[in-house]
Image 1 (tube, rainbow, N blue to C red):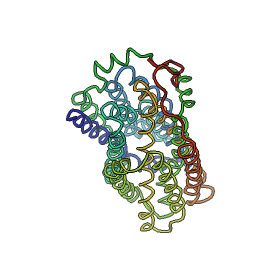
Image 2 (image 1 turned 135 degrees about the horizontal axis):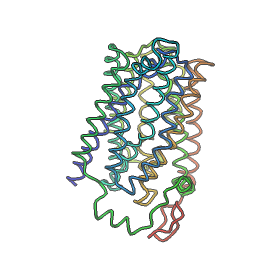
Image 3 (image 1 turned 60 degrees about the vertical axis):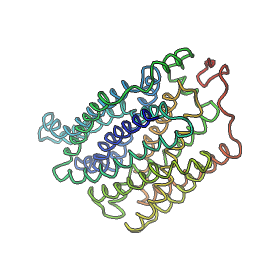
Image 4 (image 1 turned 120 degrees about the vertical axis):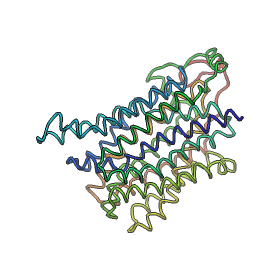
Length: 426
């Protein structure tokens, strides 16, 4: 138990440092791109291309972590994040070196921004691998609470990251990117020296005695036909679309509706981080102890539908800060409980790949969501992304009621019955 707690603490710090780096650049990317002539649609595509790359990389990294261990895959992933942030910081000097002071400089810089996000996205499956690590060192009773630590680390990264990034932007937009690259290097060193492998020799031997899940895109796709897994991935995807509609254009929304600059947007996102820490670091353990995961998914979806509709219509910053409370509660519950339910719906040797598949579905939603939300904002107004997200969450609420409450799928089959990947259990 003490070893498990020690590992949880270590993985919490690692995820926190990782998300701190991500939080440094999140509110600044739209302004960075707009400095070089990017339109609202290009800003949305900048978020989408990262998600597209992550959609491809996450399930592969997750499945590789099932086969080769969590620690080596975390090292690869964090190194990719370091390279991505480094390129982000060097975009301006590279643009000047390649194109000089010509009209092509802006295009080169925008291209480097896109390249940096692609590299980070392809290797950016560290969150799903970290979730698999936590699954390895927790039992089902404490699973949601352990996974809530990921959300709490995410929130703490957002408390400090956007605010620090906004302050560093006074020295130019590359400054937060270089700071994020430094944090990634620190994280790489922490994983190498401080984080033991969660798949112990005994567990590796036990898993080796079972048929290995196939390592292919088809095998991952077939997981959607599995009882419980399919509906949860469906909810993950539609919820991801609604969440991406909020996150992807929040900086543009804040500027258009409320007149906030990069620093103001960073402070609001830091406030959201505080709320996320309270939900996923404190409340989630008590909620999962009192209510079933299916009920929590249903209620959180309904709460998000109402909150997103309210976000679309708020006329002032004080009201926005109030609306962000239930919105953060619903988001925090869904992010944690969906993943917890997924880990209980598959065999141990499939956890990393399944969480990677869920991350891939979320990434696909972030390919579509930001661009569509930016298009809605540009053509209809700042209210449109919120209404779009609210409609999606109304659908999720209805679907969750039908598939998780009134007609729940059967539990995980016993060993010897077919698995999600066409293999028989050991």
